[in-house]
View (cartoon, one colour):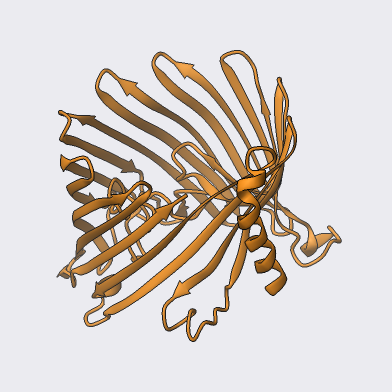
Length: 387
């Protein structure tokens, strides 16, 4: 551990001398504080804590066409818990190690890498695999193969057979928009369990409107269990003037029948959540694990959000958001049926690449047959530095 930290320190010191030639360093640091009341809608389940993380990404250039990327997180954890008296059980976590061969007609990426499809709800995770991008005029097909699990042995017979992941994405222009058509398959050969997703995504600017839209459908099975899912998402936002921006989101997903299991993604790290998206805590995920963006109680969802931000000065932002989500299909008695969420935030750029923000989220649930549940409140303060 000490040797690895010493190596990273040496890289940081050497960066000014080597960055122009064969080494690039970038990263981020944050300290976040939470105060949570009625976590997951449980009365009196309150919490308050701080968390921090230093992330450093190194890009090491071997030649004009080849480079290696290493990304690691340092000292990530909650104050007084994982980080206590200078000790952390997760001092260093390496989450990206891959090599890239970039030629005129293709690019190959091999190793532990990040891979996503569309807006990141269907697929959004780190994988050990190989990605091939083909560079055609106006069209970029991408092929991806990853190893999910060796299932306990290098021997691939019976229960030890591997679980693999396959994906193909075709990127192309569609009028003024950037379009992606994709398919992914998660295949566990040991259990014969399969899940697949097929989707279409567009993003770009139409006149003054920034648009993101996606539709996806899912299938597969695991013995007698059938996996299903069909969902759609649209987000539109625009700058009214130099100070004011507004936008909204629409979500829709079909629920599952009694003999089916609804899935809303193959593998993701919850980077998309309509409760906290388009706010300073976007990607932090409000700490309610029981809610999928496209499913309430396995009954699908219909959702609408409206958000806006005012910037009285370039460094200062004031924003708000409200969202309403209801199950698309009937839910069982006592199950979550609707949710209403309200966000308010203030952000300030202390300096270049340095921001502070304060965000409050209130989530109000309603249960079938039993009415309102306990409201959950989340207050987050964040100090973030990017370099």
